Image 1 (cartoon, rainbow, N blue to C red):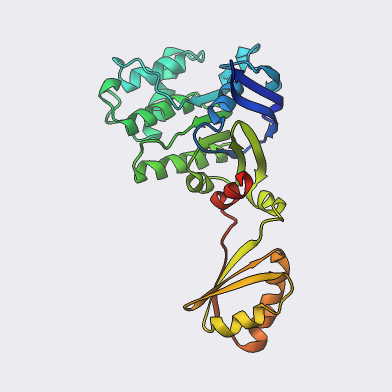
Image 2 (cartoon, rainbow, N blue to C red; image 1 turned 90 degrees about the vertical axis):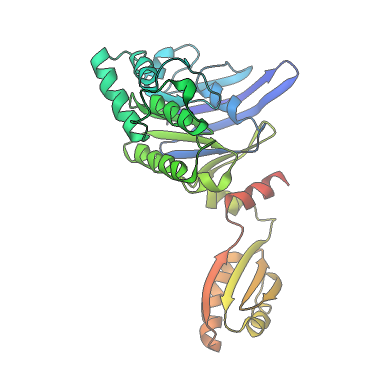
Length: 303
């Protein structure tokens, strides 16, 4: 267990940042998802010991992060907002922050150079940070976050301002960190990007944790919302008539070479479809559950 929140709340005067959050962070990659203002940054600042909870308790590696700062030796943090020494070069910046973790000058230099290479910023590492583009700033922030080889990597909106190639590079780096044994928390309001990195998510909305766990488990809890399934087939009209005879089917919409059905019992439909197709000789080219993606799950949760 990496971290726990026990009935944590945080408010800023009359503004509520987080309400009654009880959650456990497990090893691996976890996506922290929600629109702007959902409470994601407050959640991460509490986890990182930057602010103390107004109510409840936070533990990181078994300690209160506000009272036991030694835990941050094992934490890498990429903040959403920039916080640079603008006249430093990128290389100087990463070396300096790595030394703050207690490494010698020579060791910090080696770690920093390796991290800069991993984010593909070697050629620009001797330029002053004030000359960097938004994407380059994000990458040098990521380099300082991973340079000291942390056990926990906290990434607050890491893909902001990056081009598609850089985004893919960061996604691959997150996978590398996971495979090396690190725990990664990725905050984002872009659900499909996080969905490519992990199936374990925390969904937040209006300062509350609405759901957390594996994506498919969360969707399974939402039984009151019909499941949507799309089939590509050679005879959608005739197949639709057969499907309407199955128990639990609420509706069927016919398209050219495809049909969409809604049901409250998707497992029963998936069990019955193979026999129905084989018995009548239909050709089905694809079956897709259309509402198991994080964007659909999130819409259901906040409805």
